[in-house]
Image (cartoon, rainbow, N blue to C red; front, side):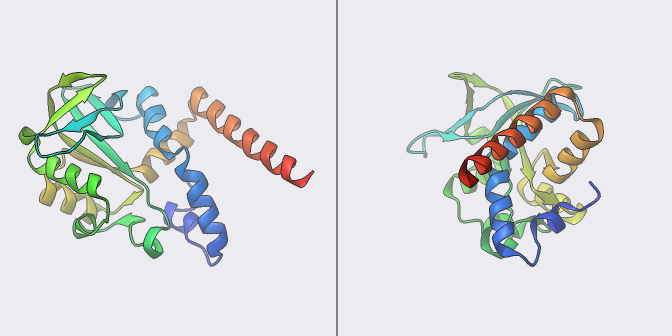
Length: 196
């Protein structure tokens, strides 16, 4: 991308930033699936798993079950693309300490799973899957942020949505191009309807 992810979403126009952040949130998790399907990264997307444990009142939905193509290892993953939340505090992952302060109980359980995966059970479509650990997908990630998160929480991997989108934009797989065209068309239809 010619404009960085943080620069695109954080401008002097806060109304515009809120709008683009909310619009992006509607489909941001799709990017990971298209990236996997296009074989642009090391993982295959298997579906949306849930996290279970005796200490949990109910299962926690996660975003992705991933299979590493080179090894066949399975991972449970969560994506957080909190673009303008809390004055952009969570847009770029710079340090693992940011994760501890995220006010999201389900995410905090995911962090515990990342540290101690043996204490949890991951299920996909009602069946247990033997995961090797956790993968975090964050909006934008610095090298220090990645190293810090992997070190403190034992993530198997920390992926940057910014980098995933840059790879999709560079290769532009036909399915992703079609999806973007569809989303653009729907947005245009809505605004045309509202403007008469």
